[in-house]
Length: 286
Image 1 (cartoon, rainbow, N blue to C red):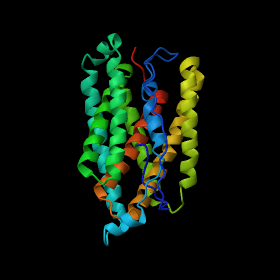
Image 2 (cartoon, one colour; image 1 turned 135 degrees about the vertical axis):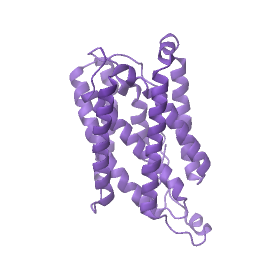
Image 3 (cartoon, rainbow, N blue to C red; image 1 turned 30 degrees about the vertical axis):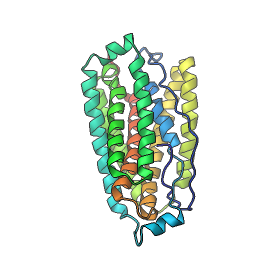
């Protein structure tokens, strides 16, 4: 999403002008294995652009006539549930596409990748607009479509890495994600500063990743992967706390819509954490 609900509830609306990159070229890293994170850099850009702000104007709050803020635990539960469903959709889609001839056809004609990139951007923008308008059906449809499209692009990891390695890394990512989500949900400490540091670091590794597309340095790739794991580990705790704040302050919004927004944030955190861990720990196919 290009912007988000402001948990600080300062009554302002700020729109960031963001640019979404095209998918980088699909190529091998210096060790000769495919690098799925290069293809998924769009996710990092989208994650970094999810830092705008949305808030009710005073007149909009009054229009709901006695509406109260959503139950925080209810929104958190829905966020994790929707995130799990989105990951399930992405995983099933990836397995289906990996067993098809899709990637063979892409070698001949890369146009479908450009189309998917455009569709993903359209889903992100559309979901953002739908959530601002409290439109539950459209928000759900666009988030579902986004999960499917991500599954298509992510399917190449099943061609690049051994299945057992992918499963192992997935559970490692799930354990780290779960621990940090618990910290974000229970800590009394304000994690805003941590979030800002992670966001700055996110922009840094985006730039470094683009540079390394040309340098093809295995050492730089290793360092970027380690930093990426640290950043998305921190962002997980920060985003969980942010979801709690927006649930408590955005009066009048449907808990389902707030849950979908939270799910998209957490979905991006988990996907990127998983991909960076896969680059560090994954066993490439021969």
